[in-house]
Image (cartoon, rainbow, N blue to C red; front, side):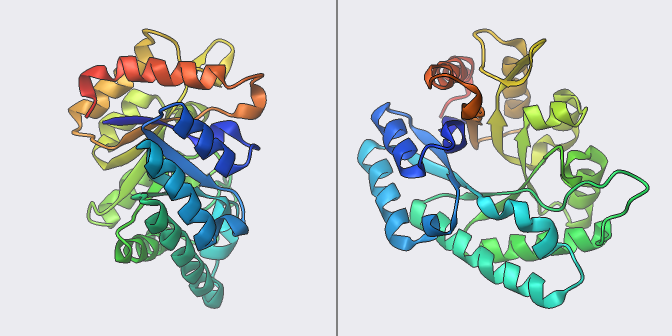
Length: 268
C-alpha cells in the first residue's frame, strides 16, 4: 500500500499551493482534486507535475469537479448529452496522464428516496459506467466508482449487482466516512466488495461525528487496513478531511502520521 493526502483537505486553498505545500512536507503520495475548468489546462497540469516530481511525490489519483454534473450529463435519456459528457471526460483522462495519476474518482447518479425513481435503470447505469470505464482504459486510467452517501453507489447491493453485471470488470473507491453516512458497516462493505477496491479515502469518526482526524492506535483504522491487506489491496490510501472545518493544517498532517504508523506492516 501507499499512503498520502488528498488536496481536498485544504479546500478552498488553490490546488497548486496545496501541491507545493504537500511536496515541501515530504508527502510521498497525493490525490489532486481538480476544482475548475482552468485547472485542466495542460500548462497548469505540467507545472503541478513538476512540483510533485521535484520532491519525489507521486500523484496517484484525480477527483473531478464535474461529479456534481454526473446525474444530468451521464444519466438521462438525452443521447447527445451523454456523448458530450464522454468527450468531456477525455479531458480528465488527459489530465490524469499529464499528472501521472492512475485512478479517476467517480461519483455517478444521485440517490432518490423511494418511491421516487432514477431516470436510468440499474442496468442502464451499469452500461454507462462501462462506457466511461472503457474510455478511461484508452488512456491507461482506472475509473473507480466511489461509495457516496448522496449517490446510488451508497448501496452495497447496488454495487454488488454492478460488479456482477460487468463481469467483475469494476473498480471502487472505498470511503469509510461515506459508508458511515450511508449506514453501512465498513466490515460488511469490505467483506462483500473489498476485492473491487482500487483506492481509499480515510478519516476518523467518534461520538463527535465523522470525517474527523485520525487517532493513534485507532482500532477502526487498523481494522480497515488489515481487511484491505487480506483482500490483496495494493493501491493508495488517502487522508481526506474537510479543511474548512479545521483551524490549521496540523490535524491533516497528524492524521497522515497516524496512517503511516498504522500502515507500516503493509507499506510498499
